[in-house]
Structures are given as structure tokens and as C-alpha cells.
Image (cartoon, rainbow, N blue to C red; front, side, top):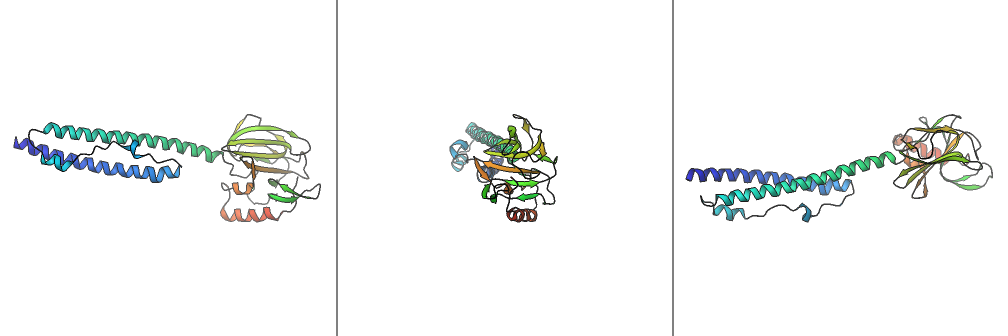
Length: 267
């Protein structure tokens, strides 16, 4: 009987050590989950009431009562602790499943936000007019220019700057000429104007970098160019701040100066 008791005591001590080590590892995972991963993905931390599952037992008092007659109590205690740990691991797994969905949503959002130039501009020589107050080339008065003008030969490809759905693709005789609106979701829309020909159709799903049309000079235009706009929540934004995917920091600074220098728009 003493040999059996000693065996049980050793077994219990080892199991208790393993349980404590596993609990410490789980605590660290929970800490990372709440303080790191959920912060990155802007998700609320899981409250302790949801994470609960730990069985609090006075182990010292239990150990004092170790005898050949309470083996069932030891086994019950270990079974309860193991079940509690399994419950907490299951909760943690569900939390990570939720974070995986957040990751997928973030990837979708990052692919949708406009982040490249609408025409190839590796040498940064095609921006002719920037965002803001500019002289209208026809009326010769200061007007608000709601986008960037990219000069390029007629027929130069124009690219969707983010994943989205073509909202409209039509002709505006006295203004934008052949022009396309793309709805990207998350409040973003982009506008591509003065095309010689449009490729994308209303309702079509497009990917970033996909050709949607070609540079022209249709509508109110003084020369071949692509007038490009970015909106978020209906507010016109300076498109130059959305070229982070294809510009180095030094190129971005140079582009900002070029856009600011142009005093007259092309449309």
C-alpha cells in the first residue's frame, strides 16, 4: 500500500508540474492574444469571464490529506484541472480563428485601398498638375483641382489602383470625357478621366494593376492625360498620398515637389 501511495504521490507531483507549466504557456498565449494580436487587428480583448476555466484548488491542503483512502479525490482533481485546461485551450483556439478572419479581412482591405499610380511613371516625369488650387487651362481662373494629371501619349494603359468594382463607365462631353469610377469598399472610390477608350464595364470586378482603359484627351482637356482622383467617404483626397506601394521614400519626396510646382491643370 505504501508503494502504491508513493507511486501516486510521484505521479501527482509530475502531473501537477506539467499542469502548471502548461498553464503558464497558456497564460502567455492569452497575454499575447490580448495585448499584441488583438491590438494589431483592432479587436477587443477577451474578458476574463470568457477565458475562465481554471479550477482553483488549495493544493497544499489537498496534499496534506494524501492517503490511501483519497486516491479518487486526487484523480478527480487532476481530471477537473485537465478538463479546465482543455476548455481554455479551446477558447484560445476560437480566439485565434477569429484573428485569422481579421487577418483575411485586413488583407482584403489592403488590396482594395488605392496604392499605385494609374499610369506607369517610373521616371516620375508624367505628373503635370497636382491637387489643390490651380489655374483652369480654358477659363484662366483659379479653381480647385480635385486630383492629379498624368501626361502620357494617347493609348498609354491606365490601371486600376486597387481591387474593386466598376461603379460607372460612361462619357461626359463637357467634362471628364470617357471616365470610370471604381468603388473599392471601405469608403474608397477612384476616378479615371479623359480616356481615348474604356476597357472596364460597369459592374465588372477589377484587380489592382489591371488595365481599365487607355489615355486620351476626351471631354474638357487640353492634351492627352489621365486625370485621377481618390475619394474616401465622399471627401476628395490628394492622390499623391496613396502611392506607397510603388514609390521609394526619396521618389515620393520628389513627386510631391513636382506636383506642387505645376500651377495650371490640363482640364
